[in-house]
Image 1: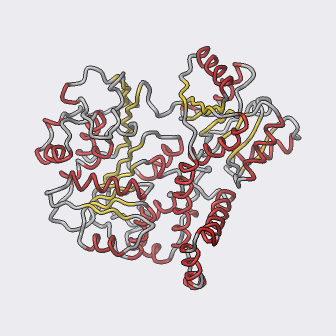
Image 2: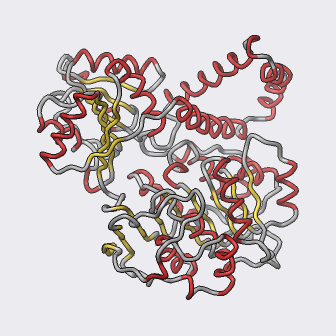
Image 3: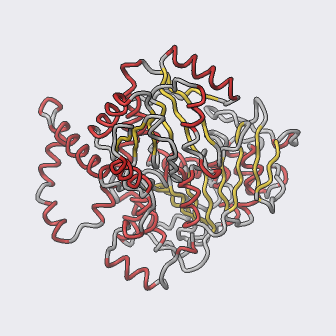
Amino acid sequence: MAKNHLFEGAEPGNQPSLRAGQAPAAGLSGEISVSEPEDALPAVALESLPESVRAACGRAGWQTLTRVQSLGLPYLLGGRDIMVQSRTGSGKTGCYLLPFLRRLSPERKAAQALVLTPTRELAIQVAREAAILLADTGVAAAAVYGGVGYRQQTEALRDGVQVIVGTPGRVLDHLLRRTMNLDDLRCLVFDEADRLLSIGFYPDMKEVQRWLPPRPVHTCMFSATYPPHVLKLAEEFMRRPAMLSLSHKQVHVAEVRHLFCEVKPMDKDRALVRLLETENPAQAIIFCNTKANVHYVTGVLQGFGYSADEISSDLSQVRREEVLNKIRNGGLRYLAATDVAARGIDIPSLSHVFLYEPPEERESYIHRAGRTGRAGAAGTVISLVDVMQRMELERIARHYGIPVAELPLPSDEDVARVAGARVMALLESRLRKLTGLERLRAERYTTLARELANAAEEDGGLALLSMLLDDFHREALQENRFPDNGPVREETAPRVGRRRRSRRRRGGETKENF
C-alpha cells in the first residue's frame, strides 16, 4: 500500500526554481497529489544535502530542489529500487543524476551507471545535463545511440567513463562488440520507462539484462505515466519496486484518463491512425455508433497494416467468439465495435478505448469507458469529436462529474518521429540476429543502399527506401512483434550463441539483478 497526501504547506526551501525553458512543476498553480511507499522517507531540502550535491546544483543554476527531487532523492541516495512518476519538466533528470555524485567512484575508470532512454535525442540531452552536474568531479558521462558511427563512442568508452547514457539497441551493440563492460555497474536508470517498455525495446532490454553483473544493481524508473503493461513489466526488471507518484490533482497510476481530440468529421479516420501511432496502445476498442462505421474503420485500420477486426450484430455467434478469443489471447490488437456488440466484453490488458463518435445516449459513455481501467488498472479514453460533438461530450462529462481534457492532434512529424524510433529499434534488433551467411548476402546491397540514400529526390531513391521501411513496419505490426501487444514471450528475445555463452559464464539467469 502507498500513502497518499496533498503536498501543501511545503517548506520554503523545497519550492522549485525554474531554469530557462523548464516547465513549472506540478503543484505550482494548485494542489499536487503525492503517493509514497508505505515505508516512506522524509523529504529533503537542498541545504541538507552533501556539499558535492549542493555544488552540482549551483553549477546547474538551481537555487532549490523541485518537488520530485525533494521527495525522490532520499530513496536514490539510499540505494532503494523505486519507480518515480512525475510530469514532464518537473526535474526527474536531475533527481536521478544527482545521486551519482555520491554513489560513483571517479577513481574507477569503468561504467558504474547506465541510463537507458528511448531516443537518441533524449540520450544527448541527458548526457549534456550530466556533464554540467558532474563537472570538476572526475566522473564523466558519454552518450551512445544509433544512427551515427561507432568510433567516437568507442573511444569515450575506452577512456573509462563512469556514466553511460544510451538507447537499448546501441548499448547492446557495444556489449556485443566488447567495447562496453557492465561488470562494475552500480546504478541502472530507465528514463521515460513507459516508452522504453512500449515501442519495441523489450527484447533488447532483456538481452542487456543478461550482461549485468551477478549481484544486485540499484534500479529505478522515471516516467510521466505508468500504463498497466509498464507496471507489469517493471517487476521483471526491478527488485521489490516501490512507487513514488506526483501528479496534478490526481495520481496518474491506476486511473482512467478521459481525453478528447477535436477534428473535422472527414478527418476522423486519419486522426485515429495518428493517435494509434503516437499512443501505441497495448490493445484498444474503437467504438462506433453504426455497423457501417464499424466496417469502415476496420477497413481503414487493416489498410494501414494494423492487426484489426470488427464485431457487430451482423456476425454469427461462432464468428463473434473467434474474434473475442483472438483479442483476449493477444492475437488481435484493435477491435472496432458497436455498443450492442461490445456488451460483456472483458479484456484485462485493454489500455485504450477510442470513441470514433460520441454515443447517442449518455449512459453509453460510461459503458464504453468502462471497458478499460479494469480491476483498478490505468486506462485511457479518447473521443474524436467535431465542434458540435465536443459540446455534447462536455455535457456528458458535467453530468457524471468526469474531468475531460483536450488532447492536441499529433502532427505528421510527430507520427514520423515515433514510427521512425520504432522501426529503428526493430531493424537494429533484426541486424543483431543475422547469421554470417545472412550478413554476407546483405553486404551485396551496400553500394545500392548508399546510392539510394544519396540520390536526388527527383530520382526516387528516398521514395524507394521509404517504401521498404513501410513494408517492414507493416509486417511487424501484422506479426504483433511489439511487446505491448499482449503477453511477452521469452522466445521473442534473439538467441545468439555468443550471448548465451556469456549468460552461462555469469551464472545463469540474471532477472533479479534489474
